Length: 122
Length: 297
Image (tube, chains in turn yellow, orange):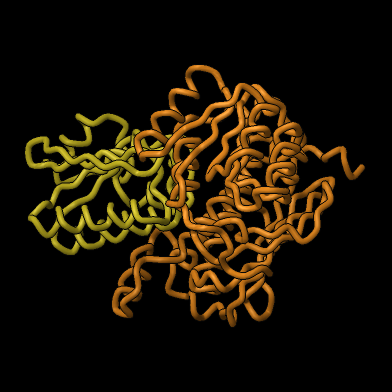
C-alpha cells in the first residue's frame, strides 16, 4: 500500500500516523513536504507513529533524518513510535533506533516530550 | 534494446478483463478498476479469457487466482501473440519457482504467488493502469534456473516491477528471511544504480545478473554511469558511526545534498559481501545460504 499520512495533535505534541510503504516515490516526497510544513508552522514536538508502516527504504530514512536534524537545530525533537518487522530491521541497521528516541506506547512517547532527560530507547 | 517506449497510451479504451478469483479478490479489483473509471469484463476461466481477448482489445488482463501459474503463462503467451502490448497480471495459487521467470520473459506486467496481500495487488493494478509505456522496461537476455541476465530501464516503475517479480521467486531452498534480505539489498543497489548511474533517464539501462549457487545467491548490478570513488561517499551514512552519525548530514547540507548513504548501509548489513569494481559502476552482492540448495548439487 502506498504511503498514507494523517496528522493529529496531543497537547503540544504533533503526531503523524504513517501507514503503508515509505519508499522512494511521490508519497515519500509528500511526507517530506508535510514534515517541513509542520516545522515551518511552528511544530517543535513531533512524534512519527510507525505502527502502520509496512516498509521503509533509504529514502524514507533520509526523510526522517532530515526532519530530525532540522528540528534539533530549532531546539525541537522528533521521536518514533512502535516500528515493527522489516521497518524495525531497517531502522536498526541505519542506527536510527540508537540515535532517535523511540517508544512502544503512544502515551509514554507523548509524556516523554515534557521531560528533558531520556535515553535513546525507552 | 528495443525503443524506449512502444506501447499505446492507457487512455485508448480503458477496458480490463478480469478472470474469476473468488468473491473477495473480485470485489477488490472491482473497486480499484471501477474507482478509476475502467470498464470491466469478466471471464470464468482462461479459455473464456482467451476467446474474449481474441475478439477485442483489453488494456489490462488479470488472471484468476484459482488457475495454475504455468497455465497463466501459457495464456499470456497466446494473448501476446495477437495483442503484444497487453498488460497482464498473474495471480496464482499454484506455482513453481520457474514460473515467475518465464512470466517475466514472456512480458507479464507482474506476478503474484499466493499468499499475497490484496493491497499490494491493488497497488500493482494501479501502476499498470497508469504506466503508458512499460513492456520494454525489462528484457531477459538469458535465463537458466541458476543464472539469469537481464536489462532494466532506468525508471522507478520498472524498478518496482522488477522487485515485485523478485519478491515472488519463492525458491523453497531459500528461507523467507534470506529472500527478504536479498530483495531489500538488491532494491537499494538497483535504485542507486538507476539514480546515480542512470539519472533515472529511461533511455539508459542497468545490467543485472542473478546467480544461484549451492551455498550462495549472487547478484551483479552494472549501471551506465562513470562510477564513483570511495572519497565521494565519505560524507554519508555508510561511512558514519552512531556516535558521529549526524556529522555527515551537516557536511552534505552545506553541499546542498539530502542525508544519504543509507542505501549502501542497508545493503551491506543484509548481504554478506558487497563488492565494487575499480570503476565503481558495477557491484556484486553475495548472500550465503544457511542450507545449500539442491539444484546445483
